[in-house]
Image 1 (tube, rainbow, N blue to C red):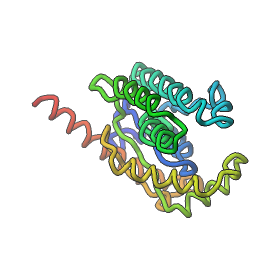
Image 2 (image 1 turned 90 degrees about the vertical axis):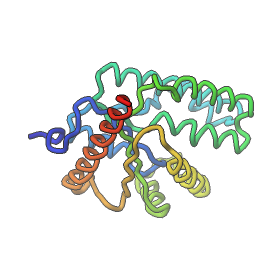
Image 3 (image 1 turned 120 degrees about the horizontal axis):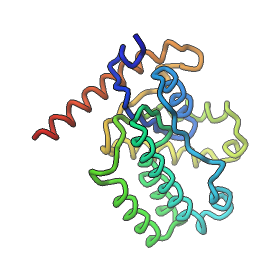
Amino acid sequence: MNARERYGIPHDSVITVAGTVGVGKSTMTSALAQALKFRTSFEKVDTNPYLDKFYKDFERWSFHLQIYFLAERFKEQKKIFEYGGGFIQDRSIYEDTGIFAQMHYEKGTMSEIDYQTYRNLFDAMVMTPYFPHPDLLIYLEGSFEDIIKRIKERGRPMEQQTPIEYWEEMFNRYENWIDNFNSCPVLRLNIADYDILNDETSIEPILEKVGHFIQQSRKWRSSHLLT
């Protein structure tokens, strides 16, 4: 019996992994996909034409960058469901507006008119009954100290040069965002409770929780469609 059958996870499930920088989204995405024999969907950074420009001038390029992310994630979400599901997705479309675009607006690196244009477009594309929302969003969380430790351990130059205040603000914004998120069911996992890099068996209780959440979610959707 494979993991999907063992934990009652439908073959067409779509699961999104979310969380702040350094929390282990890519690792979790790969581990879940391997265990369930699902495809993966990772963020395409190398082909982004605005990223380098953005880091040199936030005010000039923040709106362009967010519009690009929105379009790419929307196309990716559409492709996932056209395939018939069976995907684990690294980072959600919801984080762009709920965290990054809002942060640029509040910090003055995106104008009010650009922010409202972006929000209106996001709502028209995503916040409708026609948008294919995931079956489950897995939110990875942990203490700020644990996350900073992980960022330091992986040693990416750009991240090492970033002030710790930025990571603290991002951490707090993510916590506020997830507390108010309701676009799909949420499974919160604390990174201190598992170690899938060094202990492959620690994915098993996570799969059990995933199966339970998706089964409950689909029962809820079915009951509401019938009423």
